Length: 119
Image (tube, rainbow, N blue to C red; front, side, top):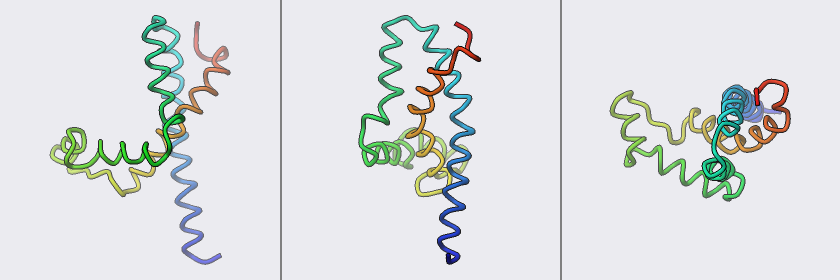
């Protein structure tokens, strides 16, 4: 393998590891939150949490690019206050990976939640 292929593998593994580290506590919190919600809000949040599974990856990527661009409120806030530009960076890779994998992690957490999330 050449240097570029090794870099791509290392980059992918680091992004995946950080994404898992981010998603584990968020999944536990989401399962706990959904157990405490009323049925109406539960349906709404279940739908919102499942959107990355339903939407094609290109649509999810476009929405993230739009939200975090300097022309949108969130992207403008991050850039003006903190000097952070998210699109096309390492952080964008981690964010996209976390968002796309969150529904799968949450469903897995929900199936195994009797061990660590009180009813």
